[in-house]
Length: 272
Image 1 (cartoon, rainbow, N blue to C red):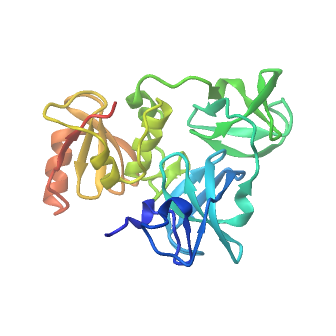
Image 2 (cartoon, rainbow, N blue to C red):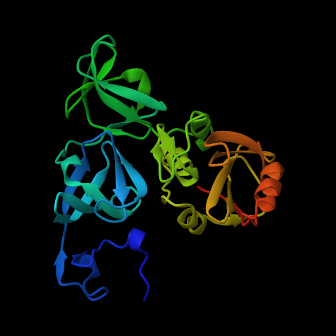
């Protein structure tokens, strides 16, 4: 049986206990919980390897192996597996109460916008809010985030979330406002609305049912690419063609991608 590396919680040495009898490894583990303490971290295909995706502040993780300063983890959000620097793993256990809903925010040292910031936070960052002071949320882990930038309920329209990221730069494997790719944009938009979504476009195509007509919020697929319909005629996507998140006519995109030899159009899926 072939196992998708991205979704298989195992290295060549260690596998999660749930894979015993399925995947032979020298060692099995139940893993240990962790939470990302850095604003953003690349999830790599190997220690010091290439970026597959990114993990955002507050993400819950299962740590499967530690090796030479690197941690092999599986994300709770979508089951994606890969390597992170061990130093970005935190032990926070406070309940997640809010998330960043603005395209980007800052974590401040005090509840005052004139004070210094610890770091930037991207849309989707998960927060444990312990209280509020002077228009800021005080985090259980320390620091303050503007109340205007966070929410405790799912958004209602993935397209609106995607459009808030118009102009964000394209970055292969990116999952934040600082840089995102086609599937990263889709995942951000759907997760913001409480809709589970895998991290890569091929996994997204397999996750949702096929439909024939295009409606707002539908996903449009090509080999290695995905976009979201704004309407029956217009889509939004993160594209290396413009190295940014843009709107584009759907029929124009189909013709352009086909002419570039990067087609064909593979069809429509409907999240929900």
